Image 1 (cartoon, rainbow, N blue to C red):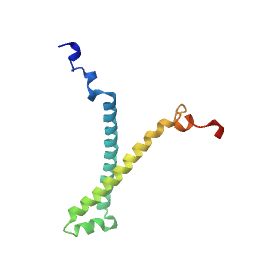
Image 2: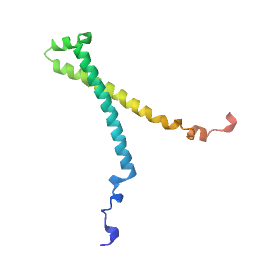
Image 3: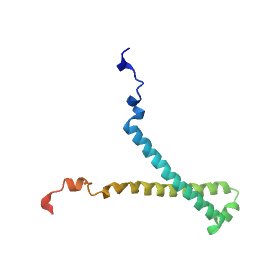
Image 4: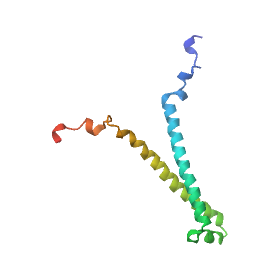
Length: 115
């Protein structure tokens, strides 16, 4: 067995590559921002039920299927608030283009005689 046959080098591991590290950072970013939205949805939903806004809590508790209605309320809030938080986080990533040295495809390939 030669030293080149040794595959225990951590730098050769595909799970430790630059792409894998960037992928893990992206997933962490997405989960983190979705969790922020879910916390906001939980707070908002609890306040809506506590203050009985629109009589939602009274209507739900008057029904025999109250847990289903409460679950559907929070499910919708989690989807909405999580999506908004995730969208805000993703759109906030565009700040790199504010750098004066950044040149996008339009400025690089435009015809000078058009202007």
